[in-house]
Every structure is written in structure tokens, then in C-alpha cells.
Image 1 (cartoon, helix red, strand yellow):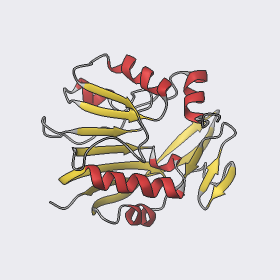
Image 2 (image 1 turned 45 degrees about the vertical axis):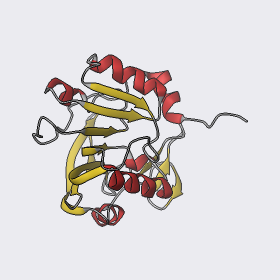
Image 3 (image 1 turned 120 degrees about the horizontal axis):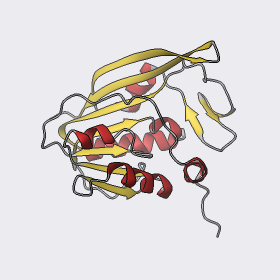
Length: 208
């Protein structure tokens, strides 16, 4: 049987480090926080945590991304990196105080998004916090590519992106308590043309 195609792994193998620019930081966390990064990619989002002295567990479905992440962090005593699927992972219930899901949920199908939400709820310790960030329906790329599901579009490289509304994000993590759900907007300028970017940034907590 042929192995399941992994477009993310293909992309990282072909292009190497994919992401530049600044990284939104998490709020100051207790030093003892058990932190899980879902979809760590090349390590861009966890590097600030490592530099600030936090210990982080990170996973990605792409083996090539995991290698790049290890090379970025260069702190084996602070980072545990696994090749694993965020929809079904090897950790025990209540293993983490903080889960960061930055631009990972939107690259899954509806069923996959629901599975990820279930795993997040299972993995958060009572009183734990989820930090969520993904593209909004107000982003200029909404509607570009082949539509695979409502609000979900596939690029030529086989990677899908779902665009969220605030209400949809609230409904996805229904079993968690909503702390904040906001729309973050900015502009991207390419060759003199301005493109509106937008993402949903949310914080949830698991009831203690």
C-alpha cells in the first residue's frame, strides 16, 4: 500500500524554512508551565518560548519540519519534538497547562478540526489555557484555490486552508470556557498593492 501523501512534508523538503516575519508572543506564563505546541513547523513560534527559558513539547506531522525545528532550537534540554498528528497524539489526559495552536487547525478538514478540538480538551489540565490563532474569513486569500468544504480551499501544492469566523471558533471549542475571541487585522503590501490580512485570535480555558 502506498504511503499517505504529506503535502506539508513535501513543501518543507522542497522549500526549507517557510516562514519569516515577527512572531506573536504568548503572555507571560508561570515558569513551571507544561507547554504543548501543535504544528511546530520549522520552530518559528516556539523559539521565543525557548529563549525565555520555558520547556516546551512540540509536534508536527512533517518529519522535515521536525528536523528544522530541532536545528532552530538547539536546546535539547528545553524542547521535546515529536513527529505526530495533532488529531491523535500520544500524551495522557491533562498533560499540559498551556496549548498553543497557531495556524494549524485551519489546515485540517472539518472532521480533523473536530478531532483536534477534542484532543485539546483532553490534554489540557483543569485550569489550563488554549491559545488559538488562524486565518479569518476577512483575509484576502479567502476563496482562493479549489474549494474542498465550506470555507476551506486547496492550493496547488495540496495544502488546504480553512478560514474561520469568530462564532465558528467558539463553537469548535464548545467544551472550553471562552476568555477572548478577537479579529486581528493588518495590511500586507506587495509591489505597491495593499492586501488586507485577518486572523482570529482566541484564548480558552478548561474549567478547573
